[in-house]
Length: 226
Length: 309
Image (cartoon, rainbow over all chains, first blue to last red; front, side):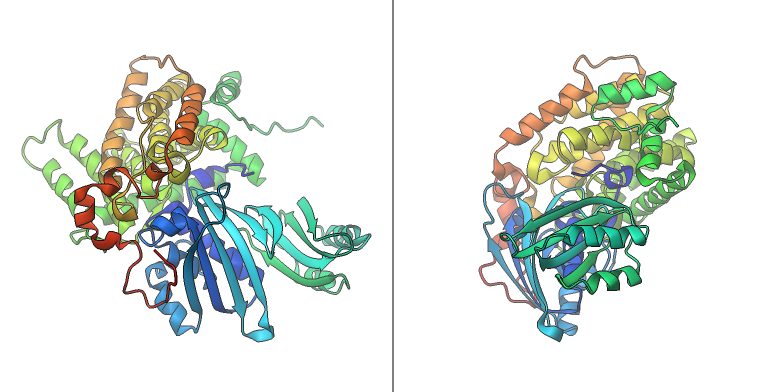
């Protein structure tokens, strides 16, 4: 849960018109882009609740795409992001969906893929007000992170001792772990571990982590909320 | 070594306790809390907040210059109209009053035209704090540091709302957006004018109490009608709440209870009146005339939208 920094309440500085439907949507797009880790070429964006009902009036569509293009929430090009996407060969399809009663009305599911190595990722996230967001799920794994810290995301095999290896590597790099969470699809099956840290992961530490045999993919979501 | 206090709190009562036990204003508690949260000194945080204030002031100035209508055609030019009226001979309630309203309008008109603003706490309520603080800068010698401190007062109250209710119009209606902004602004003005922490909380309670039940039913889903005029009007409302508290009028319902009432009302409010544009003003004949075919998804968009509404 958010700690409500003064700069979340008085902030963010953003391009209008809506903090939840525009600035929050940019941040969700940024998170999806970071999770893909590459230039996206295809995006299917499923809009839920108020995102579907009033999203276009608030430029939610353009804001999500601005995030996929890696633009910050106060980028003045936001209103033209769909045209920029087209020029950068990013194909975007929108549709409205019902993600369920319990899902926050400002929610979206993004499926993006890249041309290179055919990477893909599915992210479900909510914009919970004032530009703050919550990532609910990544590739079907429960996530529950808000982008307030750096988030290291690892897709891996569920094996004994895995967590101790990564915490040791992070400790050696002097990285302080704020939270750590593993969700898995059955014992010894596919798993996802999310580590929230106070600082960015140095590249040598990232490459050491990437060499662990259990890890199939490793991504880092930068701090999205200041 | 004794552990450093976190200065964290969940309720207005606890916030008041922290302030009173140290003889601090609310802004100082919020600043100390932020310094612990970010693990840094207070000075750069105040400077960063002053930077936010400069963006707010610029948004007012840019908004006052708007003559054209927004892309939706629902707003534009009224801030400038109000400002002009303030310079006319004998404006109602004096020049300061209509200028204050003009500033609230200005930020929201700028926002509707994809301008740069600071969400306080949301974009739909981003005109209220800038209007109130710019008024104090022009009429009460509030400098940038003073404005930054006042924004920390606002944040101090915002923590209570965020933790116990919501800032989201989709979750709590307009009371959660403009209500929260007005609540925060009333406290900020009260402290900036030398009011005590209790007076600031009373002002906040008055301001929020008078917005309870306010729904979010924007025409066509745009953050314009009623948002633009509402920001101008609630800048005035915030000043009035501060004035009452400074005069010694005490709110008999504590701020914590008003926040809980706001959450309760938000939960019971029908979905149609919470930022879906499926009820209220959004369904009036005027709304249908102003936004042909609802206009919710622009048809000139270059990208296909199967199933889109």
